[in-house]
Amino acid sequence: MDFKELIEVRRSARSYKEEQIKDETIKEIIEEALKAPSWKNSETARYYVANTPESIEKVAAALPEFNRNSSKNAALVVTTFVRDISGFSAGVAENELSNKWGAYDLGLSNAYFILAAKEHGLDTLIMGLRDAAALRKDFGIPKNEQITSVIALGVADGPLKMRPRKAVDEVTKFL
Ligand SMILES: Cc1cc2nc3c(=O)[nH]c(=O)nc-3n(C[C@H](O)[C@H](O)[C@H](O)COP(=O)(O)O)c2cc1C
Picture 1 (spheres, protein in one colour):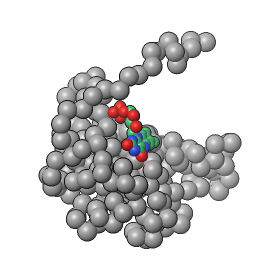
Picture 2 (cartoon, helix red, strand yellow):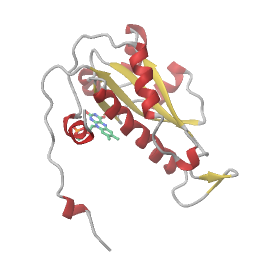
Picture 3 (tube, rainbow, N blue to C red):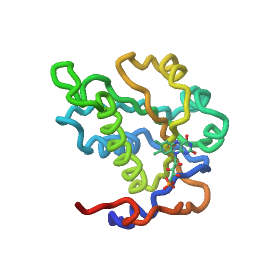
Picture 4 (cartoon, rainbow, N blue to C red):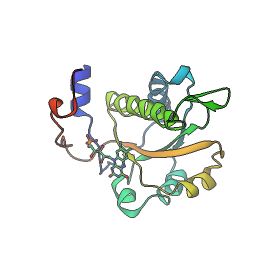
């Protein structure tokens, strides 16, 4: 798929077919997500994959009901970043954004992830509404990692529609 088509057809899916995804495919998608740029190539993005009925059930329990329903039948991928590295030099924040640079890098990696997934014929839903404390406890996610999103990954059940977008001139200024 060429890039223009890929960014057009990639849409958030809130209904998934009962289809098992191979662990190997998920690994390939993560490998592609790791090609994203990051602060000094610090690569602080981390992926925790739930792709068995038991682990999916555990992650799903940390989602609010509407996200649990939207992601039914999908694999669930918890994404985190290691704190105090991206945006830091010798343990000191380089500027006012501090650990937000880690979130920035993770967002870039997650963007690659959802596009790579689409290229592999899979659909996604990034979910920011989740219970981070429950996920940390269930999966033993270290304290120095900031739990960020849960991404549903599966085969969409039904067509996906593009939501409206702002016009370029609304968000762009040439200086
Ligand atoms: C950081 C982030 C958090 C999001 N959290 C949720 C969520 O908790 N539940 C949900 O249904 N969609 C969530 N979304 C999906 C957005 O609503 C969706 O990307 C947006 O409406 C644009 O639609 P599209 O992805 O189909 O282009 C989130 C997206 C992002 C990037």
